[in-house]
Image (cartoon, rainbow over all chains, first blue to last red; front, side, top):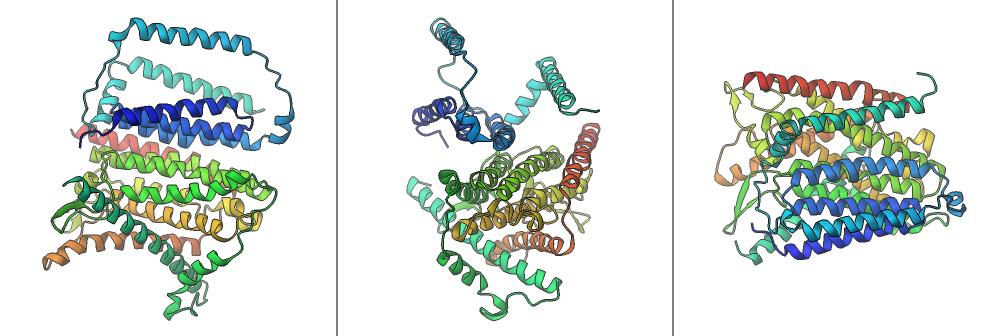
Length: 169
Length: 347
């Protein structure tokens, strides 16, 4: 079946992503921020689906929305929120933050302006059934090295966390 | 098929599937009370209707007419949203589960599931992994220590066992080469030498280890005994739903049983050949028999659930975590490696 109303869904999902990202940084209650982040991740999964990448969308939901964010929420639930909300924010880096955000935004605009040929204007529908296989062939073929380095980095982070959390090993 | 027909068929299938699922949920509760009653040398429900068969109806009425109490100390929006999240995700996953082949009704060919998706299995796993938020948020928003402990236990337990659960399915996925549940089931049709069905637990390499890991992890995923730590009555009153009453409590209850049914459906589809079985007789019987075989398998799993609940004592929390991470997960990884090696060497 041919896709229907793609512009509508694209704008809807983009709006959801941006709106929830905005909520993440403006809510004072961290649990609400985390929930907004979950919504944003789900909307992103929708965008992946629209790019004919169902495997990436599924993994995004299972790993990010259903796995990592549960652990986020787990940690936040252990914090005494009422006291944390009354405390003044000690991290006064808004100037650096604004500068960094502006620089990144300028970079995006520049790439969009100059590199218009980089982005395909329309996408060829790919065979949905072989998507997983294509991802696997890319990961274990040309991008093998990057893939292994990423897994090594994760292993280092894991060992680091264990070392820091355990007093005696 | 034109658009009106498409919508009509979809609506009919959705209503039918939800109705079937909720009825199955109600009667699984009845079955559990009856079976556990007999296991413990009691009668179980006997008063409402013959064999207590109308008991689910009475329970439902009671839930609706009970006072819906919202304690003053809760975080109200999330307290109300939590049971909804639980139930919605529990009911959504049924949309992708096929219960039989294609049927032809009034000139329209349609598969026996609400919608057929190529990534069906992946999406079901995604939806079930989101269901944990209902439990976690219920625990947090209730603002009471028992609920919070229950919610924390639930989220830790479900995230831990999800890993083993996901990996236990990889063996079947390697053999089937597809995420499409219908293709996976169709690959299991027929028999070896006319006797042994070509189910994935009997194939070479046999997925019996994966099947047992899946079954064990599924008990933890659905918070059933012996892994029902999130609602351990002896220590946590009722865990994450301590502060809930009336229909909100019933929604958690329904979500738990709906999840049990989904997990049982997946186990039958992936490991036990779905709806395949001996089919004979006139056309109408041929159409209905596969659905019956599928229902029989699901019933078998539900029976096993209840049997285990009536037999095994509850684990301790550290035992649960150690079991999941130090035994199930390595075993699941070993299963994946062995299966992949055999398949690679054979091809």
